[in-house]
Image (cartoon, rainbow, N blue to C red; front, side, top):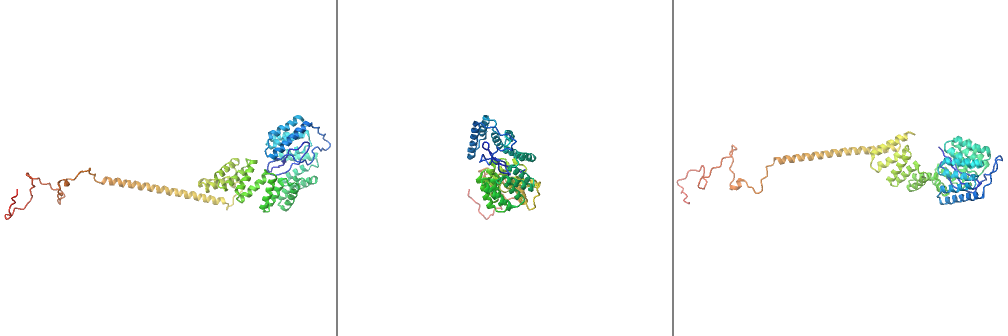
Length: 481
């Protein structure tokens, strides 16, 4: 849903300022400026507002000065401002502008019911306070109640036929519904009544952009910048046109100009962050994304893109944390699965989990628009699946090698055990064999394989010769004793 925004301002006592900007982000109060025209004008049917006490006026002006000081310091203390405006009301309950400003403060804090109540109270005390009606209409439009917003604008136009701002707001509603003829008709009607209505110019710019009439859009945008160079939305519009024309460098300059005017203008931070990511200037992208998250910490897309910026800088753990945060905020954000899978695949050596996430991304993305066959995710998936298959084969080969090694060890152990069983028993240390003890060689073994018994030694000492040949009578006997 398109959100209608305006620069919400606290305005000085008994004076009005134009509320600017119809855009795509939430409204931001910027404080009072020089009033464009008085709000005390009536159609003649309404009674003049009652006079306001001097004490209430002084307290009201003190609250406005406090707002200005906080704005310059870029640090708002909304409870303190609330107390100051309520103090002014205590001095004079007829101070409708104080109710209006309390509504602005409440809306900036997200207290929408309280803001509506304050705007309605302001209108009941001062029906000519058209800014309160406009803010109520914008709130209805942002809540999706377009019919309610139209009814409020038409009521204002019935009471104030020359009100340019309500015509410009109605023009934007017609543009958003695609009725560009009506949008241009009401925009021109607003400009006839107020030639300086930048709100009407912005509607025309967007209508021309929608219809791709970029030359006309640029012409109107440059006119708007000349009218009000302090409006960031006009500089941003010029940047968008230049971007559509393909002139990224000039577009970047226009977006930066918008930030010079107002450094918290989120749409320009968004465009600059995208340009930085495209050019792989990840530190600059991180800077703009942080500013976006300061304004809206629950922006899932900003968390996702910040993760991409961290990944580009090699800070993978931080990137994964941002992806987790994005998924918490928007579980249907398909790109989270894709970007997380890339890190698991390429950096964390977890291809199995990456395959799951690639498939999840393909399923989520295909719910909206079927992915083309040459989408990069399919190559990434095939690569991760190949790694998973290679790892599985490597693991199987490793297991097989391990089993073979264990089998070889077991066989070697069995062989060693068998050798030990076949070997003779070892002799005790110092023992000698019988042959070594007698000093004689062992007897020869007969052919039959049985050992011959050893001859008994004769009494008297010397061994008897067995099978000795008969003595030769010619040989003398040995007389030695």
